[in-house]
Amino acid sequence: MIYGLRDFLRRHRRKFLITGVVVSGTFIALKYAQRKIMELQERQGREFLEKLRRLQHFESTERICNQLIISMSAELGQAIIKDCSTDDLLQQLRDNPPNKLDLWEEMKFVAFTRLTVFIYATSMLVVALRIQLNVLGGYAYRVTASDGEKINIDEVQKEQYLLLLRNFLQDGGGLAELIRLIRNKVVTLMRQMSLTKRLSLADMEQLFWSLQMAINSESSKDPCSKMCRYLFPSKLPEHGYNNGDNNSLLQQMFNETLDLLESDDAATVCSNNVCRGFSLAVDAIAESMAESIHLAQKSTIPSSKGDDDCILSNPSISTDLKASTTSIENKNSTLTSSVTSNDSLLNINSVQIALAKLIPIVSGLTSKGFDSNSRPQNLPTSLTTFYVVAEKCKTLGANVYETFSTSPAA
View (cartoon, rainbow, N blue to C red):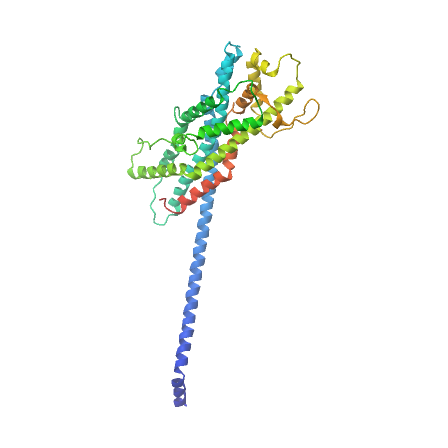
């Protein structure tokens, strides 16, 4: 029997060998597959947790960014109103001076300059803060989640980095240069525009479009593509930095921020915001026009003079201007319907109004800066609110954060 078993094994040893190899290989393969599956699951779990942490950190960064935008928007509004004030002009108009027409011309320039500056400056501020906070957020996340990557960033560096934007708001800084640029374009475009010229909403849209094209025509001064020129100093200030490594990191962050602000994506977002800002301004003007016409129809007084003559000869024009400005400044939300004297609906798009009557409307839109408590929102507040929630602006911030939080910047 033993010889028979040995003879059997000898005859079928190849089969046993192959079977053993197959069984062993299968067992090893199963163990290997199980280990790889476990490693894959662990890696996916770690990646999911990392994405969750990064998402939570990004959302926290966005909340801080929005709060900072609101805070600086109020400061920006005060700075613009200070540099584009109409108080002196209104005071002079109250005295009914002989140069009343000259004062009205200056009022025209200031009103349209201030409106345009609010649209451009608010957009630039929001885009810059979106980029700055997400660059800083990306670096901060890499500090807590880096694997062997050595990054030293402290609260002093964060503060110094954010204070770079103060160059925009300080006296004689970027905002003052932006105001000069816009005022020159407004004066050039509107110098020959008579106060008695009647304008419709379509004419206002065309005027704002022409103004936007004139501002963007100088490639070296275009506020959308050359935001760095206005927002930040030309180089990193040298005072206050004693640590060479910290200064090097701050310089790197500064350079990366400048590159991002000069990118096509940032310029496109800023330009889109500006276009939408002018649309919001036209909507607010339309609402104020409708309400003003409706109030005028209720208190119509027969007069032998035409509207345009009254505008330029009425001794109390400065009082009317002040009253109109006060009544308009909080009426910038939804366009309302007005009813004519014969009870037919007023088509606001067909209405033409003298430029002199539009001046207090345009001035009233921005006579107060950002005010989060205003109800309904005034125009500066509406601009900031729209820019903060604009999808393209949020996408820009998300892309910046993703780039700087996942890998070292090039």
